[in-house]
Amino acid sequence: MSYQPLVQHLRDKFNVGVLSSLESRKAQLQALHKLVSDNQDALCDAMWKDLHKPIFEGKAHETDFLLGEISEAISNLKSWTSPTKVTRYILQAADSAYIQKDPLGVVLIIGHGIFIIIN
Image (cartoon, rainbow, N blue to C red; front, side):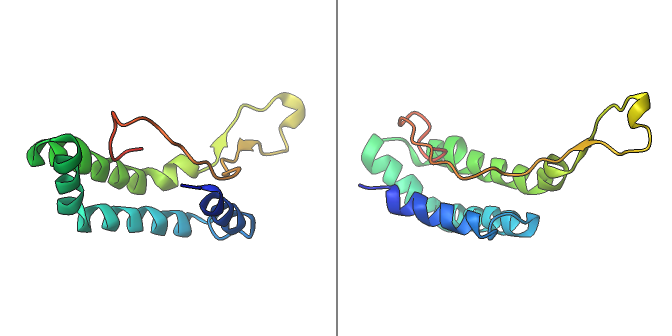
């Protein structure tokens, strides 16, 4: 399977600014949360068929864990991306200084099957 078209599509969207606002990032996380929660039974069924992972374990260790992480990201997104003030020296007293956390691009992470859904 070629991931190049998918990654290129995401890069194109990022480069035009579609994914740069907090609202769009939050919407992406909410869509991911809905995708996982709407398909939780199908995901757990696939884990059973492929790996013989019991349905309860699939929900407890995979889908519920992932949904919790997504909810935490949604809750903390504003604080994680807010500017952080930094120490100024006497010559900089009239200026304001802070670190602005901006995304620099997109990334495709491919991992092994220990973390089934998180990857």
